[in-house]
Image (cartoon, rainbow, N blue to C red; front, side):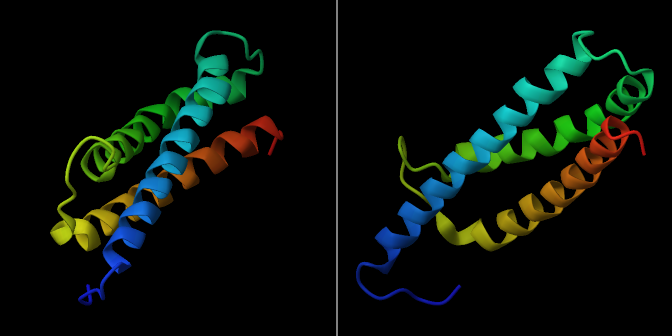
Amino acid sequence: MQPLADGEEDDREQLLQRFCEILVDYSAFAHFEIYERIINGKERRSRVVEVAREVYPRIAEASEVAVEFNDKYDASDHTLDLHALDKDLNKLGEELAVRAEMEDRIIAALLGR
């Protein structure tokens, strides 16, 4: 990362905190609104249940990476250390891409594809 001018670090920290909030909201919504419905037997289409059970472990792994990222970079309760941010963002991005692929499989099953 490039050195920051005065005030830019505060802006970056605010953006990072907002990103963490959105990340947690996304993870929670997907879990509580979609996966919980499927896993708790409220979904009757067998193909949807089959795909969900197949991909859920990988989605859970990606969610854990997101939680770890949030715990590390949500500055509401600790001082941020941004030295590993690039590496951590890369890892998070890779995990979110995998999660999106898994979610696409569930959506395809929901749509009967």
